[in-house]
Length: 233
Image (cartoon, rainbow, N blue to C red; front, side, top):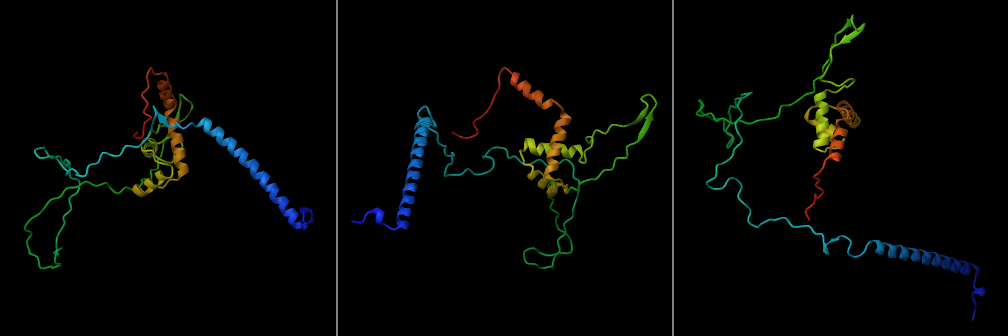
């Protein structure tokens, strides 16, 4: 019987390479088993259970028979209240029948039906140039000017717009990417994502330590009501 020493050199080298790979894989398998054993110790089978019961999502309480929309019989119906003032009046003439397309209509108008609706106006940004007078104060020995309260110092965006940006970010939780899109599509005002961050920083500095004062008041309060259950369990 031919021994391995009689095999070709290439075959013996290939077998040696396979043996080295087997040893390396065996070592990796041992490490993986040890790590898995440690993981099982830290994560016992009852992990994620509360009082021996697993978490689960409750199904929505939906019935096969859907309720009819609107008020119940005998209840007073609710309608959107009519506006107190009418800003514009548009006259809508009719020259062609919308059903058959005929233009053979009566010469006189038999009836006028009124519809009232409310709409958001189309807005365009307003560019304002402030011509700020400066006069010499004999008491202070310097030029002085009136204080401008509707725009922050050094800002190129008005205070109303800056507060809207803060409201979008804080109250509505909009992202820095979404805020410029809303401003350009609704108001025609173009700002960048970097300007949004600068606006938030400017308003924060203008408010001063008010935010930190709120945090300190919460920390020093005798009781704090915190709702951490955002999901149905």
